[in-house]
Length: 88
Image (cartoon, rainbow, N blue to C red; front, side):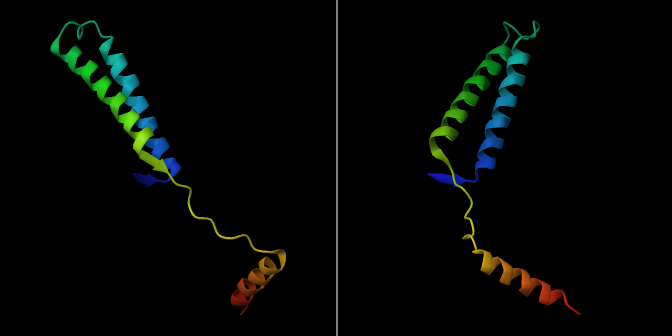
């Protein structure tokens, strides 16, 4: 199972949703209905559903590793070290 950051998975799902909306609009054009193009649009909509299902089932979201929290004393020491580097 692959793992990606949560925002990447969300962006992929958003793109699929936008593509689905666009295809649904295209399917509504009267000139497209009852043509091979309409069948292809319907097939593309089905593939988007398959892709969304695969992403939800097989693409895990991983939270980025976080740094351990510092105590107040450690934070103060870190600030002092940074300030010492800036001193002329």
